[in-house]
Amino acid sequence: MSVGLEHYLILSVVLFSIGLYGVLAKRNAVIILMCIEIMLNAVNIALIAFSRYVTPTMLYGQVFAIFVIAVAAAETAVGIAIIITIYRKRDSISVDDFNITKW
Amino acid sequence: MLDIVFWILAIVAVATALGVVLLKNVFRAAISLIFLFLIVAGIYITLHADFLAFVQILVYVGAIGILVIVGIMLTHDITHGNPSSRFRLPAIIVCVLLFCTLTFSIVNTPWMISDLPPNEPTTAFLGEKLFGTGGFMLPVEIIAVLLLTAVLGAIVLMREK
Image 1 (cartoon, each protein chain N blue to C red):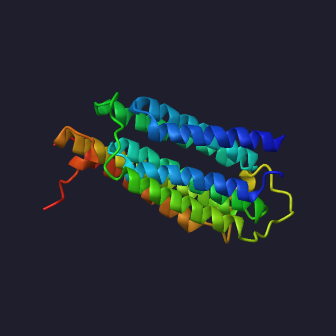
Image 2 (image 1 turned 45 degrees about the vertical axis):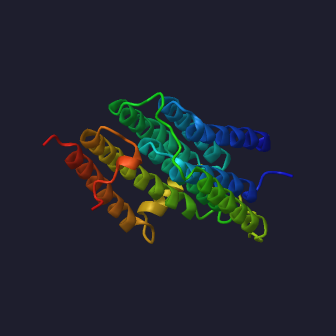
């Protein structure tokens, strides 16, 4: 059986599930940020697979993937800045200690 | 030929993603993440998305990978910094359920596969789509504003009081 759309989508789902597990079950804030990147990459794979197999001449999926990459870059920059700011305040990057806004 | 390449890339991608989640050393997890980004660029090439493969290497491997490593270096706790929280078991259950649901729906959906040959190289077509009439000019400009906002936000957050 040759590789088709389903294979890419299932690969994307596997990566997305691993990323979701990391986001839900990890304490280190940097690891959580990395797992969000894994999830965004998984979505990009799905978008480009749809673009390749369903609308090969339109390329809309690749355009969306470009926007996802741009938003991911912005998200990482702000996320790392927030984590380092909280680390300066709390001396920890465990999300269990990130309760500054809790009252 | 393309099938063998896909299977190798897929297995290595899943292995490196598991490495990010399971490795105890945060720095090794970051290296594993950068390998995953490279592998995903290879997967884009198998999907005839050459421009996006280079964008992936430039933005993810070059910028985001370095940013994550700098973030790890600026915070201590590298060697034992990847513990699981008490939600480990519920998280595994949620992820397996999500995987089963999505895989079931993917396998049982009749996808409309097109037989047309893909555009290649994609760079000119993508430029036409992004900047041409009837394209995505407004979102491109909004993305520019978003990136500027993110840079300013990061600077404001990191500024020493």
